[in-house]
Image 1 (cartoon, one colour):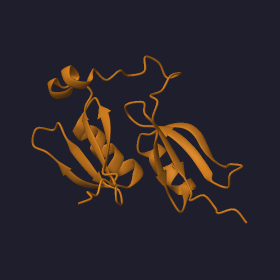
Image 2 (cartoon, rainbow, N blue to C red; image 1 turned 180 degrees about the horizontal axis):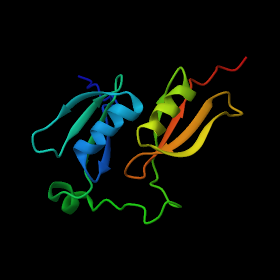
Image 3 (cartoon, rainbow, N blue to C red; image 1 turned 45 degrees about the horizontal axis):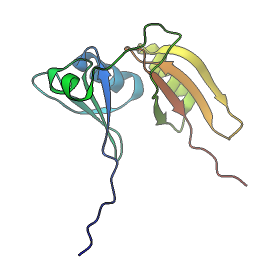
Image 4 (cartoon, rainbow, N blue to C red; image 1 turned 180 degrees about the vertical axis):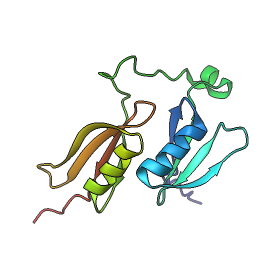
Length: 139
């Protein structure tokens, strides 16, 4: 009897300083719908297609001792080894909304050589968020 071990990508967890504040920020700046914010304010989720964007505190006793402490970048010249990417049909309008709602502008949207329009911002915790269009298929 063979088992099915094909994974389904379910969550991206972003470690943040203030879960309710980050959930509200992502909903307003990037246009996500809040799925839930638990009563402890230690877990929040946003709707994002087939994958859930989840938020949890940077430091928590459940995981710090188990998997290690989360390290944050000490300066704006460094960043975590992961970035969050969102696809929009109108990247310019989405970028403008994000910046107007508290995202820190890094690089305005521009057409890249691989056929995607891309702009970058930082969220309220300093995480890099890529805002892009769908990549056009090669001709």
